[in-house]
Length: 294
Image (cartoon, rainbow, N blue to C red; front, side):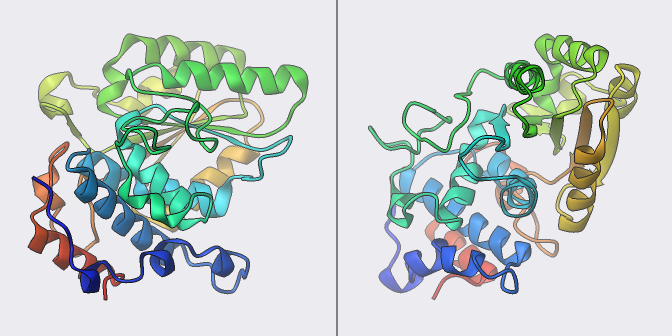
């Protein structure tokens, strides 16, 4: 059963989420503030939908905030960058970036997982123009991203391709076929970001199928590899900037994150579960912590 928030706790959704005017002023741009608004949007979307992958979405918010608001060439014209959300169940985090950035109307925040909404449970490019690739079945996103990146190289189309995958997803064989190909062919306009939160649907990555040294494996496949704190905006910025300067190899950024991450001084929401719902009082307290509720 879904519970409705009070008008006072919802606050000014439009003011909280649609902040395009702020983005036009570089002096106001603050990725920390943007990521907090994104987290609030994720919580509201999943609450209103009555279901969703809250842990997986929150672990990826900082990565997406840095990409969308700082690193990506986001115009929809020629030479723009491409974003492939291979871990498609974390779609609420990408929708949050689009809502906060003013690409989507703030009123859509309550339409997650509803019929005909652009905010489907997994990204659907047929319904949302800001989705580059429809994803859902895990393990496939990297292959598509490699194809996009190679196509840009062969046609001299410019732009960088970013693919965000989960660490549990890296247990899929197709990921390693793609990694081997991209390294061998030197697909340097490709960055794979691994959301390494250590958890997957039915437990930990370690107890399900250990990846051991992911960095060593990718290095052996001829990738440039960087390991960062996936909740540090500065470390992410530095890693992504270095990836754009790499002209010989693809880059993998292994972003160590926490499932259900709300803030550095907070325990993960729902004990880091893959999915689930907050109780109404937990939701309101979380929004107050994020400083967007009124």
